[in-house]
Image 1 (tube, one colour):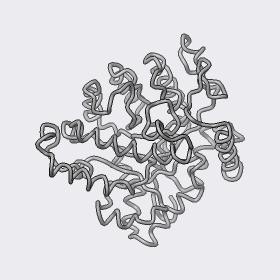
Image 2 (cartoon, helix red, strand yellow):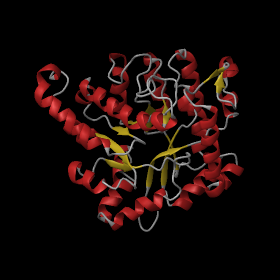
Image 3 (cartoon, one colour):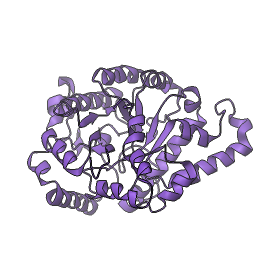
Image 4 (cartoon, one colour):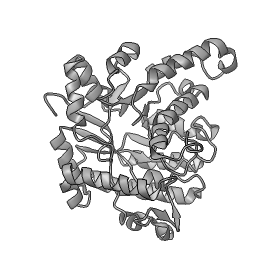
Amino acid sequence: MLNGYQIIDADSHVLEPIEMWKEYLEPRFKHFAPTPEMTIDGEQVYYKISPEVGNRIRNDHEELIQQHYQSFLLNNFDPESYARIMKKNGVDLAFLYPTYGMWFWGVDSMAPPLAGAFTNAYNHWLRDFCNYDAQVLRGVGAINAHSPEAMVLQLHQVIEFGWSAITLRPTPIKGKLLSDPAYEAFWTECEKFGIAVGLHEAAHSRLPCTGSDRFDTRFALHACAHPLEQMLALLALIEGGVLERHPNLRVGFLESGCGWLPYWLWRLDREYEDLQWEVEHNIKLKPSEYFRRQCFVSVEPDEHYLSAIIDYIGVDNLIFGSDYPHADHKPSIVADAVALGENISKATVQKILWDNPARFYGLEAL
């Protein structure tokens, strides 16, 4: 709690120690354990990061950690120091997403069993990590979308862990959009068990990502990856009928800001007015109605147009995520989010910081 506000960090990240993969991978996959140089079986897991950019990213991250989260570094990113930093920052609950894992199983050509081995190892490690303080640290399960036929089984494992959320990439994997029929059984189970789906992109991974075929700089790739892939993922879920067939499915669009949303909803509604006849078998409502009914988007406190966004779509679909402890995370972000109460109502800020993420993650009883 900070300044009287209860706070859920809807998008926080762990930093998986590189040595943990050898410990948690199944024996037959241990020789695929990533190296400190971010290679798997001799191949780089990332795409279009020059040595200069790579060094700058590492230096910026090390500087952030040294200046603001040194105890986390000194304790090798262990759960005790993580929980302590969350409490120090005023965060009551933190939902934890992967960092390096999104690269490790984000290789389009990866064999499905190997991708499954990585997501399985990550989930078991994360379970042990969160068990240190389950009152603060909440796991978000990784799902192997390389193998649609195995996704339901992995989802049930996540449910057995007691978790209420999973994460997927918005990017197509092996040519499959999120609306591909191969995923239908998975969406059915997510809806049945009330599992929140957090869509989270990662720039520079070896999946086909918007912009990566035409730009080379981190400036361009990072700018494109997060918002543009989320826009296309929302389109896929609407155009493909996933949100129509599963009205109780909850989907969150994370780490992309919210500024893209009003335009995209306006654009999709406008297209629907003209072309409803083409998609009416899958879309029965205006696209914006699907979003308002069952989707959420994370906001950044420095999005100066936030009050205009609220005027346009309301506040019920907005949630807060800090992106801790990534290089582009701002140490003041939680305090900045609380300070939004100086410009918009405190009740609205409390909805963004607690009520809405609690509803997204299925924690209304708290």
